[in-house]
Length: 225
Image: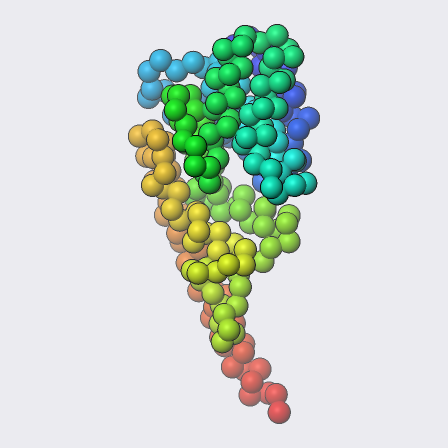
């Protein structure tokens, strides 16, 4: 990829970013993760991979405004139109579209090409470990969701079985299981290196808030007549 084409795609990406948890630095981390994963792979089309990484979250704003919109699907079409309008090759635009369309964790459509699998893993790698915890907390704060929910007896829920969104619910529902959902050996290995940090943070946070909640409620109960 030429520096001129890289700059063109990067500038378009920057114009689409509107989410602190999915900002331009997230995009760059995904790109750098992808390039590291690709060092262990053969026959990678680096032009497709770089473009797909840069453009994979360009429809996050649309999903924020309308949660019924899938940013992966909308972003794939948005990227395809952008590339076509800027005279990129049709086959190239189609390959980038496939990568973006299949990168989402909750999507039932799995990635097929090697570039799509690398993007999937590179994006998930930014959702694990300490980085994943930090980004989740940023996102939860941005959409005004709490750290945790309380059970009917007033104790802190650990997230299991919760229907209401919270950080603990997101950890149980998604974050703790990400380590089994990688398509490449390199991506899986890099993720496992980060797993302990995420586990320890979740456990320590739950223990802290749960202990404070339990002792605080007991003390308050002795003071209320």
